[in-house]
Image (cartoon, rainbow, N blue to C red):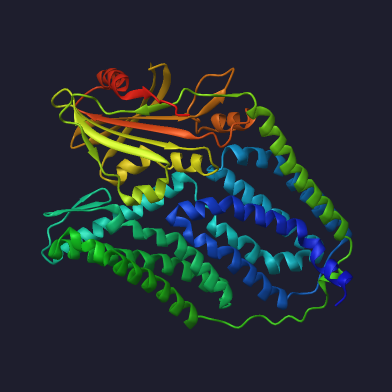
Length: 511
């Protein structure tokens, strides 16, 4: 095949390919940092494989001038949206609703390109492999919390019931299972439900690769999710029996083996069912070649040039604003001096893996008697993933998983200690029938010179404001303080001011 032929084959799709590379690069941080979405690394390769198989049996094109012109202008509208998308992405790499908007734009542009090249027949034929990568886009946090937290509680509930049938005393606290000799935590008993999202991806892939009819694909998806739940119940129940019979120390030896067995059982069950239902691919004789597709070559190069301008313009925007940012006063945390109840706590390795901070420490103490404090401090240096990591530590997500009941969000508390302004978000939980107040301060290492210090507000307004002000990769400090022993928010917030005064210190800089 001549060089010109190769150019004609690949040139019509170069802009769409560039968009997919951009999307996967955007998602790869979540795939790497969040174990729940590690399966995403397989999705690009599976999508390409599915597209190739469908390409081998593609139908002939059916393009009319009017529909092609409409698709052309729709494609340029999608491309125009990419500039604000790119600007917002740079300031909010963790915004999942944005990730869905971005992914849908990439899917739309790809489908429009196929529509222009082959008409409705191509649009219908290639729709599944083009839409398949949406299975690896992280779910919006509210939806994920409802589904995943609900499923984890259900797994823990069933595991406790099954253990009771065999005479093993167990009690459920949220996603924690309490035994006579200790606790089987979320990581040990329930985190296997992350296979739910992976199971959805596997069910969709098997349905396509084994050519299942649509009704069987839906049945495979529903039955597969049910089977994954059963496997996770087995996983949690097995770990409860191990902990009850051999002690908590034995969990480390059995955890990976039981988890792997549950994962393989879940995937194998779906594979067997899909294999029993497998069908034959439709045989459609191609009547065209991609190199014969007229009129797409120059427009795709124009689209690629526009993408280059989008990235260049975004970089210019942020660099011009970064010159106006000023350093916040650096600060550290020291535990209360002269208090014999202060006890520094070890940070679990699982927490280190998830948060990937540069520096962190945690401690508990009592002051005055009957009032218990817990504090966690972490610092992330400027990097692209820092914002995602610091925002992944949210008490309204983490504490209900360990048996605390969320009551309400309380008013923000703004303090100034050691010449450092601190803004705390406030939450109220229930612990053993008493209030538990949690205060969270997230502060960026830089701020806009003309504006107040802030912690990177997560609302729509705050996220858009960060992009408008050109704030990205600034580095963050997290201080979380929890206190129990107060019945009302007012005295708890007053005690917080005193505790912050005792613990927050200016950080000494070294040359």
